[in-house]
Image (cartoon, rainbow, N blue to C red; front, side):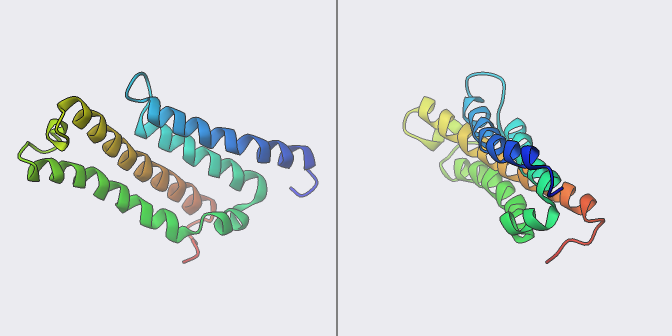
Length: 141
């Protein structure tokens, strides 16, 4: 793939826009279509595109397997931690109203945290699935 100069330059230009668009989808999820799942898939697609053009070994230097293996459970913990925090504040599990003094601000904070947890987990799992299949199960530790 070394002789594909235009493809490599095009991907280097395109990937930052893909990642920023994923963040837009994430933070726009409160107000329209989008949210953590869609943003996580788009974010992972940026790294998958990088691996397809530059190779899996080079992507592993940019995003080592320890990163996505750590992010997958971390996102679940953020999601569950948001629910547990609302329990400790006197509400029900994932009752965002109790997270702040103003229920509307609590709703926004709770949704943001939950969606960030979903983004993190979906990104890590999608990246992990791609790397596992692309490396034929021989993922470097």
